[in-house]
Length: 449
Image 1 (cartoon, rainbow, N blue to C red):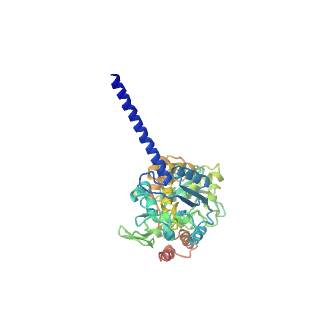
Image 2 (cartoon, rainbow, N blue to C red):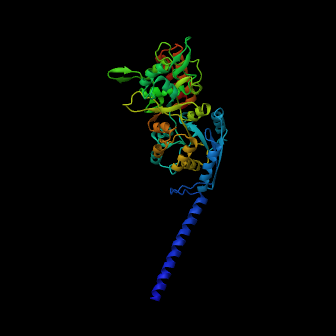
Image 3 (spheres, rainbow, N blue to C red):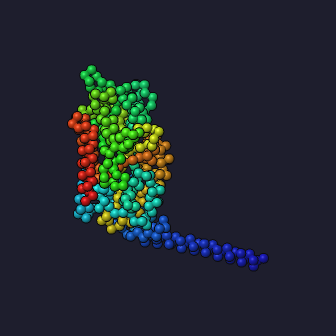
């Protein structure tokens, strides 16, 4: 029996030594892999020693540096320097830097920028993430905006959608219990919320809609209405062909969705209409809202904190963007930024690995908690939609739409000019939109060369 006990003890000790040896070997392998830059996720991607430069626009340096520190715990051979620029200088400085071959490896890009800057962008190497994995990670909107010819050209850290902001005190005073869910309901309550003095001046406007220059993101509002009414902003088979003025057949009649949208939008600034509630002499829509000069406005999630900061006692809430009909497919409108990788970068794999890391589930949720910007990830929508202030923006992401624009800044100017031409009685709805489409098409043709 003593010999058997000794033998059992020897075998057990041997097993312990073997297991310990295996674990020690595994740890050494992992440490070597990390030191040599191999991807621990198991794709066999070798990441080189790299010094990356990232240019951002909206993300604070302190936040980004915290993510960089976490990333470097896995990839100590990759150093990253983040620089935050101002909106006024950003695109010009970026284009100049890339032209002089001194640009960043990674840079913030508007979701419409592929058309304008495609020659400056490098696609994601396939070994970083498969196209299916990318599609499964993000909502449809992201795939439509950042994937071209089955290649990925960017990763967003967030998305954002238009929603209805309303003054609860103004609603209570007018006896209105709920915010409008449809545009028809909105038309019905606007006269009840509009207050005009004996001289015809607005004491309180019902909603900030109808003009171009003094309404924040008015081109987005018009685009949202056009998409909701059925306008095809571009040819489904060729995004460089602008098509929003094309009519469609409905119940045997030819319907021009873009004209219907323009008419609906500008009616709120037309003194001859019963919904007249806004004009070009009024304050900017955001200022008017926090100063209680307008009962409703439409805006993005980042305006929640801005309004709270300027008017901490304002009793307001946010509801979903009104729809043409709740019985048909919902359509919300998005405007957001992502990050792309420069075609000049010597380290495209390393750059995209960092962007992949930034949009992992844990990092993405932390990003929302720090910034309150809605997630682009499918698997976080249910969690973030519970947020009392920002949940409405998150819920809308699944139905969010946008369109591929040749140059977002110039398109904004063109659509504002179209709105102004209708407001001033210079053009009909049809002529204003036809001219706008022709101008945008010329822009698209220029970038396609």
